[in-house]
Image 1: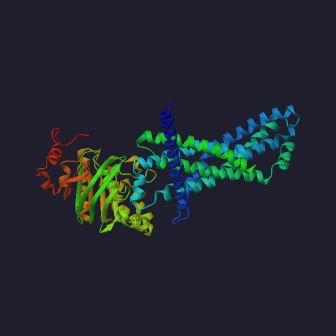
Image 2 (image 1 turned 60 degrees about the horizontal axis):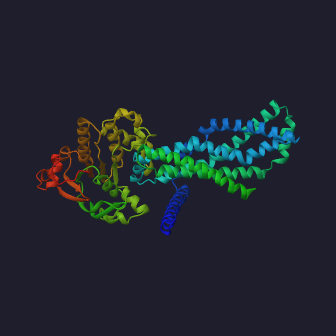
Image 3 (image 1 turned 90 degrees about the vertical axis):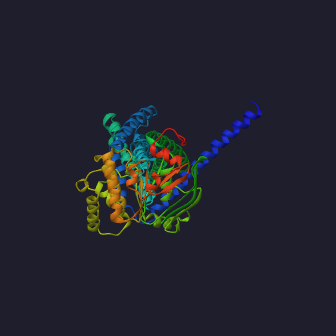
Length: 261
Length: 248
């Protein structure tokens, strides 16, 4: 490789890094703007309720399904491992801690991203390409206040609640497999859980779900708001919103997990 | 009323508006014509502040819109009503809710008053029976009429029309043109119509301006426009393939 080739390569990396930095700055300003608009009246209470329903209650079925099966499969696998070391009694706390601290917040966030986040990007994207966002602007109404801020608040409310439901149903799923199927006593499952799971674990799950709520609503709204032209633009934005949200959830989960452990 | 002074705008180095000047008088209905892709819609978006010019000034009733920000800009925008190309109606709202939306969000009118004004607006555009329908349930022509009703509901001083008849059949187009003329007569707004409907637009507008290469190359009454000796205007009016206009 000649010096010229290296220079071209370094310039390419530099240009990529600068554009990434620019995009991140743009995204961050968008978030700050949306957060600022949350506190500026008039408050869009009806819009907030609508979005809580959209992000929250309409995601219930998928959360109930994934929560119950996650708890069940977790119970099955952990029981199998614990039996090898003769510690089956620890099944309850193992299932509960895995779900409350990790799987509950992460999986429910990923599920909501797939179900509601993608729809959010597509909806805002279509509003952009059909000039509905321009129509709001032309009426001297701030589109960020109307479309973005209510989604961020709705996600902050809906994500922890969905995570709590995921946790509950997951623990119950684990109970069904561990107690009803594999024969562990019900008392052992719950009493050990009571001894090992404390408020700190629940708080970790809560912090994670709150931050995932911000990530999903922020990324999905941003991608929709600045979508490309036509159907292809919306389709690309939707895919990129789901991919970026999911990757950020997993990366942020690791960093938050290492801070809060 | 509206004064555009030396407006310049380029996207990724490509010049779209190149030193454009235009004066639109109070209560005039001015049509801006030009080829597809000549920058007519970009010009309209400059007028409502959705796009900012790289250079130049836009004066609305003497106030410099390009320098306005925040509440000042909102105050200027409050004087506008806009009819977008495909109507830009909110999908999740009914026709009734769409028309009442600016009143509900921008005024403190009682809902009975809003209801009365919306029904009146629906009557104006001949869609009294369609109030409960959603935009997806009505035709393209009806959408434009709803968009017009929504634009007029706040009784704005200036109404902008972005190709209000594109994609409609000639009869519906004529009905939309007649509606624009009737509402203009009734409400007395200053209007800017972006169009390439030649010669129909000559019967609607008080004045016609032609946009070419980022500037206004001809501006006058429909009669003056028809009799123009400008070879670009002549080619555009006749729709001839032969002439100085570069086909994009």
